[in-house]
Length: 104
Image (tube, rainbow, N blue to C red; front, side):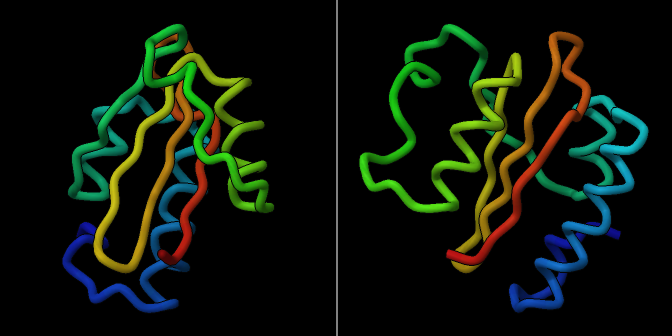
């Protein structure tokens, strides 16, 4: 059951966070994360041109958390809907080490 099939309210964000917490606890591979959530992530690798560009010039708690997590990860993945965005952070073996989910 992918949360992509749900609407995009606060319950959907909580649901996605719960799923990702379980996947993070096992350091799930990217393929398992995508299959479980029913979404595809756009992945940026460490050292890529996209990864070297700051997320935003505006300092917000959200952007600061993303930047900190991305600095500790080998790769970052992103997917979004009209009302929710999901970031995943992967180690060098493409295993989930952290994530962020929020409204937009």
